Length: 243
Image (cartoon, rainbow, N blue to C red; front, side, top):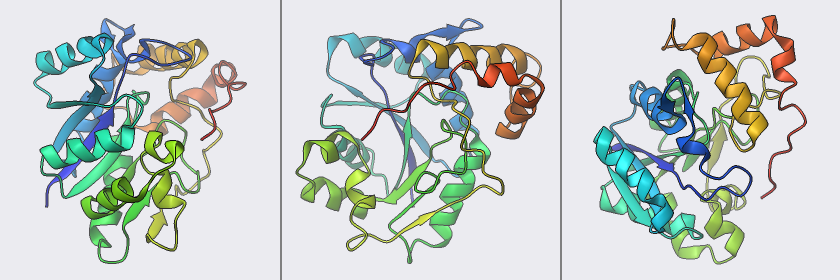
């Protein structure tokens, strides 16, 4: 079975345009994320799913520079973009990641994917987001191609087209799913990048850890934040956009 990590990426963020190509230590946030996803042992291929908009040509250029496969599809209908990307690259298992998670942990990805693979006859969808115990920014969702195809064919409402997996987890009568939990609830942390404050925190973390320990884990980040509680306050007031 081919396990493909599909990372949705576009320049047109409403709150922080161009965020994924912002640089820290002369490397873009998207490069950090790709580098970390590559370390996940369970992933066979990484695909960037971007849009056909001219502004996203920069993302395509980065993919070409890094020799990363990409697919260009609808900006608004992200579900179709995912399904078409998965189809074009013959994915059997889709790992949905979003490009605003530059310090995602490959160990967490492997934990979620492994749980899906070991229970693929029992579940259509496994994630660490249904019940949040991990920091936001480590989000990993895994589903079968069959489940993605069914969602693509049946989802009609715009919210379900824009948010790839919402149709799946909002229909427990049609799909079987499971939530992977962390040993300790660390969901108070926000390591996704959607605002300038979010970027400021991630920049601090990367500048602190990456030069000496590029393979840092999410536990390393938590340890740093325990010693620097003022960093947690940088983006503590930011509210996640609602579905």
